[in-house]
Image (cartoon, rainbow, N blue to C red; front, side, top):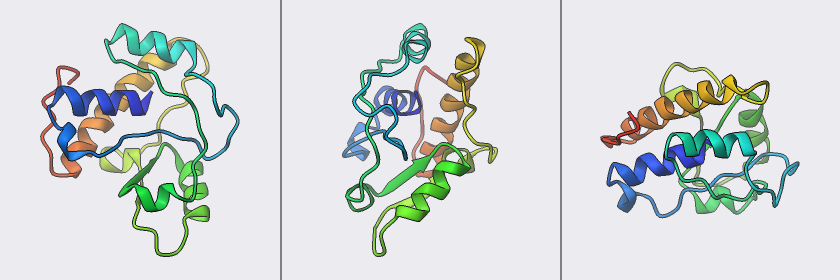
Length: 141
């Protein structure tokens, strides 16, 4: 969900030229090759946010190909720091660090969680763009 919300905000704010690639992956390969959870898709559709990614696991190459890698919670950050190779160019940060410092809420316990998580992803996406020195003007805000 976070990737879809962020990518949509980048696009609708006319900031796509600042990003070579926006991607999403997990620190564990539990759902590798799978489509997003149907409740995530429904929440994005409800908010007119396109979502079509396929799950994959983070790769060592990601730390050299991306300038920033954003973790969703403290466990993600711990895992990312553990596997980050020496000399990688990627800046690691937890999504919430650019806003209130909280981790992304795990929405998988009832439908209302997906709405809360969507709102949190929207707020953090705008904050991340501002942190990067850009001005989000998306209708999502």
